[in-house]
Length: 263
Image 1 (cartoon, one colour):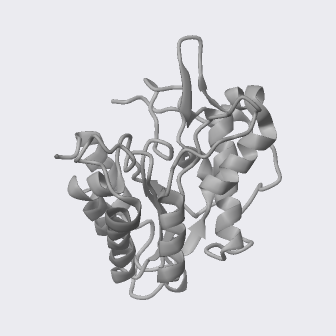
Image 2: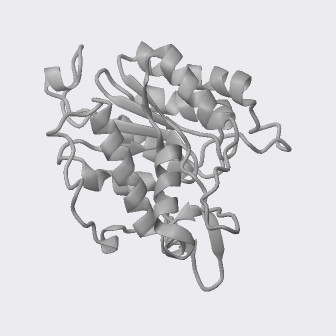
């Protein structure tokens, strides 16, 4: 499947160095590092026709120092397999430079067993496709990071937040350990957050509107909350240093989220 004009343009813009690049790590050679995201709709950039739906990748820059940009290549509906098969990983790897970071978050669409273009098995093909992201980033001198999928909003009758991703998070955790890759355990952390907030309060973090009750995609407060978890994990795992991460304990206004025009 070919990329849309908007996606090709975004990839091209992300590929333009922000300052002259040279061999070696970005920071050591005077070029700004970029944090790239490869993922699905839960992380993706949204446009005005989708508001208030928000990907957590849209809020991540609020927690990063000035001069540490995010190249968000996450796209709605993609799995670890379809992202590769459509050439999207190739587009990211064409943009990435030594010293950059590639955050990889998939599972929501890998779970769709009825769709052979997206479906993977947790302990076999899912891990196999994830290895392609890891090896691709490493070959470019970048640092790969795995992120377990953000948990959906689902509660039982007793008000207990329920996991919905089956074996995929466990398979990613095992792969991260096997490959020696930093892991952002967004599944476990978001599940704990939804439990803490409870059944009613979590509605204000998800894309609930007058016409929609979406328990998969978050709104601006939800995106900010998940991005905060991601930033904390990037610091904890030493992917980023203390000077790279900001506002971890500050209130971030939902009004900071904006949705560009889709054109």
